[in-house]
Length: 114
Image (cartoon, rainbow, N blue to C red; front, top):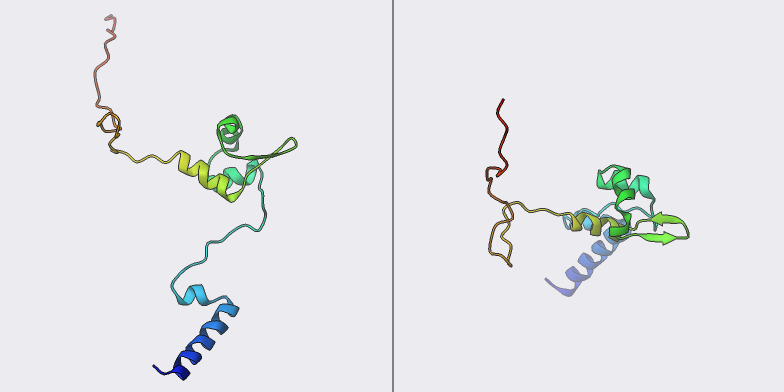
């Protein structure tokens, strides 16, 4: 390709980038992001698909922001909460060399027979 072809290609890419379709052209779908910096309990619970009560009960162990008496969450906080509770069944624990799933064992407690 000659220099003129490269200039034409650059001009087309520039126009597409300004139009916002450059990501679509490259096959990337832009992640829909909320323009607000912080969100409250209700929307955070909705976005995590969990009850709001669950968030309120465990707030001391979860990443969040506190502005005065108001608890708020950012995108990164929600992502961190989700990552904290990621479970991968059958994963081998490096410390013990055992799987995370425990085998079933009968109870040692005896039943009283009637």
